[in-house]
Image (cartoon, rainbow, N blue to C red; front, top):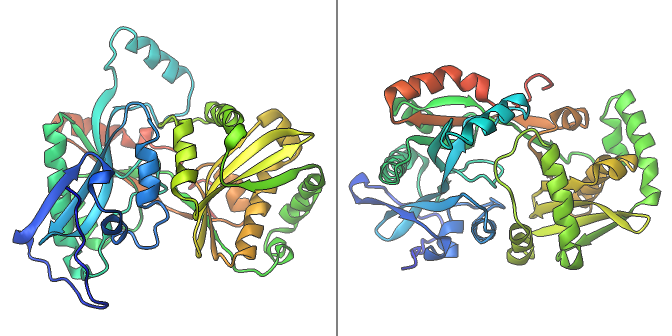
Length: 390
């Protein structure tokens, strides 16, 4: 049955009674009304349509869940979640250790693997708890406690020994931080989010904000633009196979791999989000050398994936050309914030980005295993960007 959202008059607030709160765990997003879900995620580009594209993307080894907290039939809070087998080496740089673990798993398939139940999504920029705007902030702590307890119960029923929250932006809301501490969750550094305010009027104004050395380097790199054709498309069409080829090349170069995205994921985003998603295609000498998948609304542009032929694309400075192309798009459309995501922080900071810290929170159901994970967590964390933060 679809979960209905009771309409509230503008400015009318909902008083929360913890005894009337009900947690529901949904195995498919289609069981929830689009308007009811999105009402809890106002201004979030990765809302219902994006999550539906993820769910329909056919990503192997992930089981999607959607947690809602209701009062009197109204959804007052929500959060996506997933279940999977999680390898503890996932966030470590690829190398000999990964090779050794892979060899051990030929004999013991469950070696260093835990059944994980995680709030958040492997495919979103951050973990976000969505609250209906009619819920006063003073009730957030009560609702969060109900949501987390309900999810933990589901995790236990599913046989998951590790419960986590992924990529939560810091600082947390005080009520949430206190709740996680009371329930024994441990935090470890996640990968920050890079972003840049569009607080300039022209590209020349932007260049003036950079150091003289970076400014000179960028002007030199931008000379390659005359040899590159740039096209914005809303349907990959005949380019789908080339897109996936470049995506897999880019993924193989990455030290951190979790989800392996599918053609259905990319085409689904463009199909389900025609007003909020497009792909920029970069071509030189008749050959497609790079794609950039982006999400946007009136206030922000999010760079989801930049996939490039490393050998030939680098000679045209396509990473930097795409950066300036995205800044131009923001200027053309009055967008005030460009979010370039995670990883490759050195370049992004050099180009004027700021970093927002994210954290992972986890709790193992076995006290001894939890103590061990707490001790080794700092060694399992991904690149937190702190070594190059301004």
